[in-house]
Each structure stands twice: as C-alpha cells, then as structure tokens.
Image (cartoon, rainbow, N blue to C red; front, side):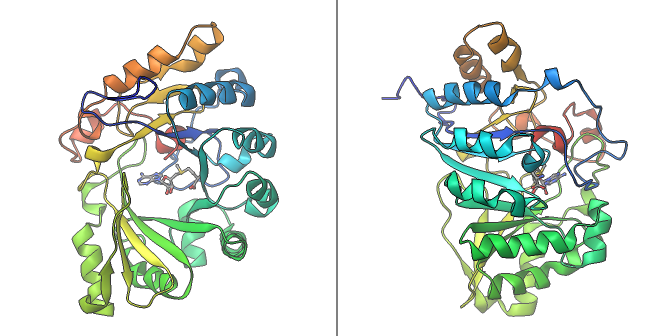
Length: 332
Ligand code: SAM
C-alpha cells in the first residue's frame, strides 16, 4: 500500500528528491545557461527568505522527501548560506549540492559540518582560456584549486560537463583521462534548450558519438559498463583500472522519465514538476498567506506528464514555442 505521506504521480512514481534553487544569481555567465541579456533583476521580496525556504522544505520532508539538492543560480552566493545549510542539515534527508565551485574554499567548513558528502561541480573545459570564454569570467584556476580541495577533503565529486559541438566536444578524451587518475566521476550532459540559450539541435553530442570517441581512443574492450543506481539519470561507465568513472546524461534524446523522482523548487518559491514543465505552482504566496501547501504539492505532481513535460518533439522550430524559464532561474 502507498503511504499517504508520499508524493506519488499518476504513473506511480514516488517523488522523494527535491532540488531547491537558493538564488537566481550566479558569479558565472555560461552562455548556455544565462541568457545573453542577463535575467531581469527582481525585488528581494519575490524570493524565499532562508526562513521561508526552511519552512517549505520541512513540508516536503513531511511528505516523504529523502534527498535535497541545493542548486541555483550559484547556491554559494546566497547570503547566509552557512547558517542555512546548518539548519537544513537538521532535517532527516541526504543533503547534496551542485555548484560552480568558485567559492567552495569559503564554505567548505560549513559543508563538512552539515554532513554534505556529495558535490557536483560544473566545469565545461580543461583549457583555461576556453573555460573563461564559456563562463565569461576568469575563475578557472580558483575552480581547479577548489575541486582539489573537495577531493582532498574526501567529498564525492562529480564533474558536470555540458558537451556542445564545436565548443568543447574535442575534450572528451582529456576529461576521461582525468577520470582515470583522479577519484571523480565526469558526467557529459546533453545540451538542453531553455529560454534565451540559442539551442541548436545540431550542437548536441549523442551518447553514441561520445562512446565512439572514447572507444576509438581507449579501445572498447577497456570500457566497463557500471550498474545504475535507482532513479539514476546517468549511464555509468569506467575505463578499466581507472580510479574514477564517467557518465552520460542525455535528457532530451534518451530521457530517463520512467524513474523520475524529482521535484524542483525555484528561488521564488514555485514548483516545477519537470525540468521541461511549462507550468508552475506558486508555493511561496500560499505559504505567506498561511495556507497549507501540502495539497498544492500533491496536485502539482499529480499533473506531471509521463515524459519531458509533455513535449514530444525537440527541434529548432518546436523549441521556440516552449514557454519555459532559462536554466539559471530553474536551477539545473
Ligand atoms: N551554479 C551551479 C553550477 O554551476 O553547477 C548550479 C546551477 S547550474 C544551472 C546546474 C547545472 O545545470 C550545471 O551543471 C549546468 O552545467 C547545467 N546546465 C545549465 N544550462 C544547461 C543546458 N542548457 N543544458 C544542459 N545543462 C545545463
């Protein structure tokens, strides 16, 4: 029997993983994430305060959420991050984070104290000049140092690489080499269409293309397929005898919706029941009005489409009709 304190959709998928965007602000400007013109600055009052975020997170925990990922924008630019994470760590959940790592050194003590063990770091190039071009800032060295710091401090580190044709797809082998010598998991993420990111279907790099490059270089007999964890979005592999591993996430071409357990809470307190969802449910206003938000959460998930927010075709024309936010304001 399904526990009434669980969030379950029409397809029987139990939703126990919440991704919270702490802020829409970011200290990088990656072109595929942040629209060129930036995003509209809004009054602070439109966003959840740390107290509100905690209160709302507690409701999700009462509804069976077992894992919370902090994301953004850049979560580490949220004012009062250390205090917030220490409060969140009192909830009975696994707490993880996705970050660009620019400020990891300033927050590593709080992260350790909060019991965070797994951190995903975004890094799209191992070439300093190229990385700084993609992110339109000059933090490459700092990020590499901070990745080293995380590894030294025994964090489980995944490196998120958004692979884009003719931008960084010539670095697949170099990233894999890194996973051979360092205890990291490199994850190649398919470039996805969002508001203002000039997505082009021809810039995607498919799972097969990635595996072809890797087997061409390392030999297919040296690629080991690893088991996927439950609800895993990643197809996991490693090179024989490597210290680390690699994964491929192709959300558009090979969606993993059948095991989806994710709910996204934006920094302005809205839930999206899918990354590609074109509708949102406003929890923050209801919460501020003193209304119960449990029913809103359950209803939102009940309305979830079977696959990819109900979008069946992703091509250059059809994506122009999609009414979604930019990734920076959804929170990956
Ligand atoms: N600032 C943090 C960071 O850099 O990891 C967290 C937020 S960021 C929006 C979360 C993830 O979304 C990153 O790994 C980023 O590379 C990924 N992302 C952003 N835009 C994307 C896109 N258009 N396609 C695929 N992944 C994207």
